[in-house]
Length: 379
Image 1 (tube, rainbow, N blue to C red):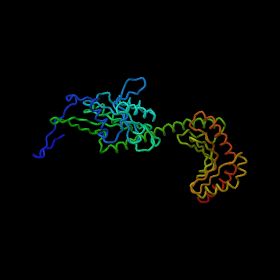
Image 2: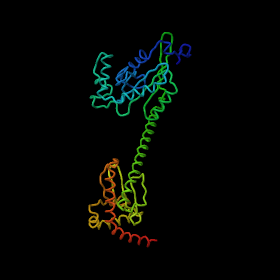
Image 3: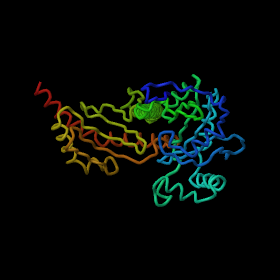
């Protein structure tokens, strides 16, 4: 930091001081400066409590607990001259502690602060004014995993900055502010600057980390879903073999939500569908030519009454004029991701696949001969 001497048109460096040299302390000085000027941290905060110790079965206390403009709780840790090695661990513990605070508890915490340090007042009114709402019911306080951490120190150890950068990469919003003291004659100046993430790239880093966290979560969900499907299809195929159904005897378990097996007519397979909410057994008319699929569907539809009589129940006939494929299916709602329902689902699939094959075997074979004859004539 420099002082400008306008008469001489020169600048002179202000001497930097350690807070310890100036007999300044975290709790009595830096903390109080932030309590009365929280926007020194670059945005508006409502200080909810200082020296907050409302943790069950522990005497630990965090320096400042604040609220940002979207209702997230903010843990602020002040360390003055040196961050210390354990500051990130402390802040993580405090953030975990406050993550479970309800709206009613937050109001109670702030009311205690107002009664003790501000001569009273209404915590609800103060929070509503800060959040710019008429009624407290209009806002959400401490939503989900939105808790934040702010670290303040003159010097940050490498293990601290590395941890903060890692937290940012995992979508946890953490910031480091460097606070430096400067003296000129009898006056004292402090410089408070955000250094991690740099202000000019903070939004970009937050967006990138959020995207990475989202992608990681999606990949994890997909992996679990793929593993679950592999396990389900293994049980379903075992059930088909047990019941003497040979259509899927050469088909292996899959990570996909469907399995297909030949019906004897090219590109018109039997299909089994397994999803979170239902199971389906269907005949798929999926030949390369849309007109052929619609012709096969229409010819089968003319025999609907006889086919459903053999099947033993109504079927769902889906011509799907906007698509190449046509489908005849039966479905039933299940909680597919509850493993306890799998025996019931596999029984249902095995039974209805057998019925579907019996109902369509004769008409599909006959129509298949006509399609093959057409193919041969074209060739």
